[in-house]
Length: 335
Ligand code: ACO
Image 1 (tube, protein in one colour):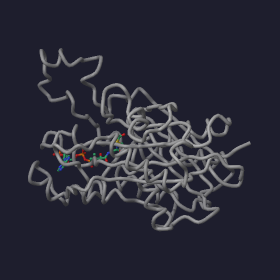
Image 2 (cartoon, rainbow, N blue to C red; image 1 turned 180 degrees about the horizontal axis):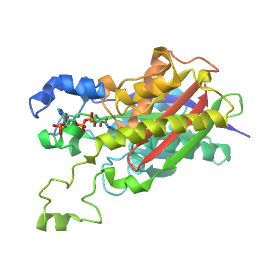
Image 3 (cartoon, rainbow, N blue to C red; image 1 turned 180 degrees about the vertical axis):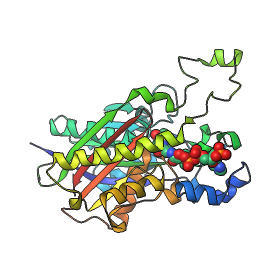
């Protein structure tokens, strides 16, 4: 019997910092509105015309995670890549990581679970490790949102929120059953798929049809989000799925040493914190610096937590996420 531990971690964010004040110059918004509604002060957006891509940022994060784990590239058995902003429509970005890192011809799986992507990836990797199939799995969450955002007043409710970046972990098989992933919990509710989505171009509306019939309302290419509705669902589902993990492991909320919620909105994190009656030092947020980096948000935050030495051996770490799909999930990890 094996357990899965996070053996290495790394992250990468583009250098270019975009402050709320910078956005005031290109759309009708304000630093005050953005901070008050979301907590965000700045985000990273790759420079236009730069060579950076979702896979290149993921590759940088992956290199750091591999170094941090102290393993060689040859020891990686499998790749899982979570993103909603892949380099290409197909193939997925996992194979690009395999190429960029010069890995052996190992399997590469792309998953599309948006803000819950990292937790879904962790859950899949955990099953492979516990079944004995693989020993070292590279998980990457990476997003290049800035290229797809509508940076105008029309798109302001979405574009001010999202940032670019990547995080990666090495999930490794361990014999120490006292440590590692205790459980993961995954959910979806597809009836709300269109409440937070990029509808076209896709097979429902292919690019040639868009040329013939461009959407007057600009719904092509740009993400649509029914923000208020998403917010209301998020706070309920976050609580449900965290409680589900606690119940599964016969724990109460007091057992949580550190909560890393997906960084969608500081107000969502604060609501969850209040419901769980957790003190500030038990909840980690960095949305102020990076905005919402979707599948990358949890691994970036976890990498910062490790940098700051905020986790001790034996601590209970809780990860939770909610996003487009709707999909949501949680993971409890004994550090
Ligand atoms: N600047 C200034 N005003 C704005 C902006 C902006 N950037 N965006 C919207 N507004 C205006 C609206 O037009 C509206 O004006 P009106 O009252 O005159 O009509 C007003 O501000 C309020 O808009 P709301 O959308 O109701 O604002 P809300 O308080 O809901 O905040 C937000 C919007 C931040 C998007 C919030 O709803 C939210 O965070 N939702 C959840 C997001 C989330 O969790 N997403 C899931 C993860 S993402 C993923 O999975 C890909």
